[in-house]
Picture (cartoon, helix red, strand yellow):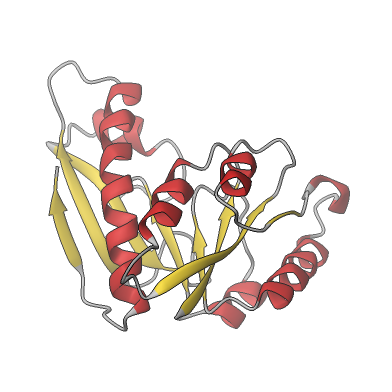
Length: 197
């Protein structure tokens, strides 16, 4: 049984979809939910599900990423996970951290990578006039929003879409895609999964 740690920064809706999927014959179980802010709403949701939580607030480190990451690693060492899932974790991790977890760390990103790395993906898709948008689960590498693609889910861009409306439809697909990719990944399957919304 694989042990999974999940990093969050906010409400943790993707974390909840991951945690709630890890039951029955699923090859993994959640062992830790970590946030970089004590007021991240997902912490209460994790605690309510009986999962250990931790907070490593980035602010006291005042931009010292290596010290912040050392504190993250101390929490991970205590929980001893096999897989690390980033689920709306809004801190960029440096190569020294990523290389230690490479091949065992997943992220979900709200675009069809390699399109629209970084922020404001929904607005950028609309500005570009795209017909299709969606989300990607990928292995994390030192390059931002890069790494082998493990799954993608698409949604059509509709006439009159706003970034918020598009984001809401993509989020529904994120909650489908990430748990399914994690299940496959935990059982050793790294083939790319394609879903349509």
